[in-house]
Image (cartoon, rainbow, N blue to C red; front, side):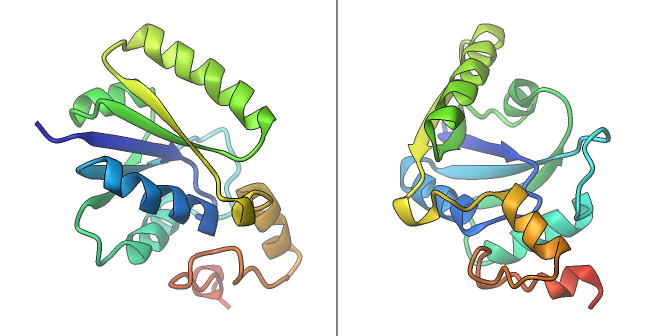
Length: 158
C-alpha cells in the first residue's frame, strides 16, 4: 500500500514556503496530494481554479504530486484518497499551538490518520500567504516569495 499524504490549505497564493514543505515531504511519502480548500466564507484573492492552475504548474514535472480541490473535513478527504497522513508546515510557536489542536481533533475523528509536522526552513519563516496577498493588493513585487514558475501577473489579468 502506498504511503499517501495530504497537504491541505487555501494556498492563496501558494508560496515558496509551501513548495519547500512539499519537496521535503516527497522523500517521506510515495505520493503527496495538495488539497486546495474551497471555503465560500473566506474571501480569497485568487479563485480556486487559479490556485489549482498555479500549483499544478509548480509540480508539473513531479508525478508523485497531485493537486486537487476539496471542501469539508480534511480527514474525510484523506479517507476518500486512502491517505494515512496529513502534512502541515510549522513556522512559529503560534502555528504549533493551532496545528497541534487541529491534529488532535483530526486524530479523534480519524485515529488511522496521523499528522506529520515539518518545520519551515529558516529562510521561509517570515513568508506567509496573508502577507504575500497584502503585498500583491498594494502592487508590490512578490516574485521572491512565490515559486519561480508562478508569475502572479498572469493571474491578475495584468
